[in-house]
Length: 453
Figure 1 (cartoon, rainbow, N blue to C red):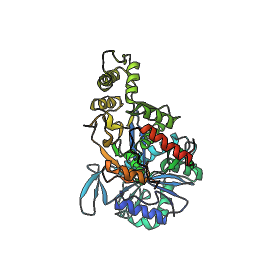
Figure 2: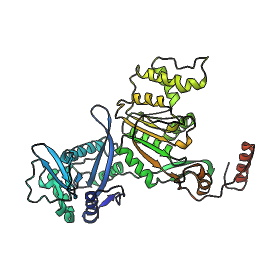
Figure 3: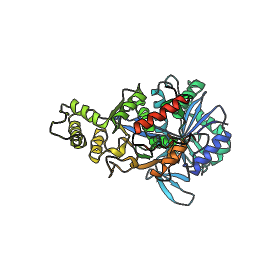
């Protein structure tokens, strides 16, 4: 049985064709091969713009190389006169589809380029090519075009002998003397395309069992990162403790490590400092500043005076004056970004978004992710975002224990769930002197030996 990534398809994959092919790979393909399903990545095109790409199936073989397979369901064909490819669903509906040969070809060469550019996989060779899977049809007896020989096709008759079909596809693309990636090369490619990872959640207090607890991402958060690779613009909503900031930081780091100039910004000055510390050392392509600090430095760099006039109120200076200077400075500076990630988006005002959009090299299609919690909107009650996009909701509170969550849950919508440990029952103290009361509780915990100084 092949090594499968993921081991099972998520429920979000509704295509019968993809599910049938996944099962065939899982059940019939040799265990020397690694099969990755739903691979997504971000690349930079010839114009220097960041774009998303995907491959339905990637097959890695240590002795042969790599195959990228595009999957199409229904009855598939091509009209030679119009040049259009089409698919007829099981319900009899005909749909024009993208050229699957071009999709598979582009995905293979783009992905191989990613492997050659990545440090860990760049020392290996990945010969191979691409193929198509038509799991609802049969290719036997069909006069195929020159660009699509039978060796490049998997049809419904091939599903029970898929290993032999993969062999034929490799033989079409590779020769006996072609360099092979070997087991180490396959692992390097797998690490790039299907990397397992965890976020470190720092604790405010130094708990005996660990200074920092490692928390594995939930399925919902893995789903979010996959969605971010597929969608260049998204709005991510989540309650306090749902991991928005960790995910925003991780996504910004991933983009920057791919060589994509990225701005990670937020509203709070202390949060920006924490992000810089947490991600340090980070790539030169990642710029981390809170919004007003960035606006101040950007305006100064463009030759404008960002200092507050003596007669101006602080509120007006930060709300309107400094953001307006930023917009003016953009027209006089060449510094741009291919991606912007915003945390605390609920506190950003409408005209601030306009300046951030203009900071993108491609304001219409550049990558832009906004993380926010509308229930923490302190400064901006009537929030409007700069674009309409898919909204992904994080509904699990991972930062607090279940006891604390149960106490504070009534401040949020009741669909927020607790994903934290059971913990101890929270201590509720009513006081007019919070600092003294907190100090007393900390002293008690230290004396009981639960915390160290």
